[in-house]
Amino acid sequence: MLEDPYTGERIYIDTKRYSKAYEEYVAKEEAEIEKHFKATKSDLLKLDTSKDFYKDVMTFFKRRALTHR
Image (tube, rainbow, N blue to C red; front, side):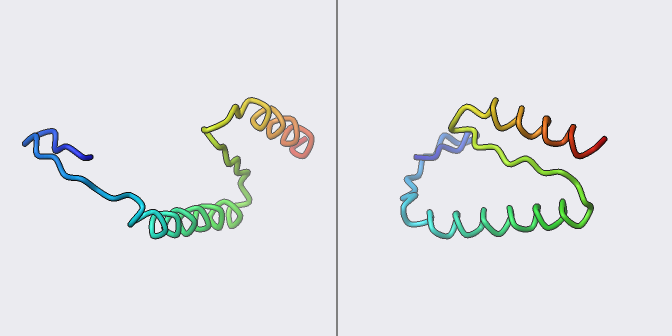
């Protein structure tokens, strides 16, 4: 259910109907971002906010410290 904050109008959106298109859009966007990072030889850290990402962040910076001396 979405609500327009200005008018208060509510509409129902069946998210199952759009989930595949959204997943494809996100995958395309992520691939484009990764391409730009690789082109500039920049480090990229992808995080999943649905889980604890402390270990991933620490591993990333430890690896980066070793390779950027």
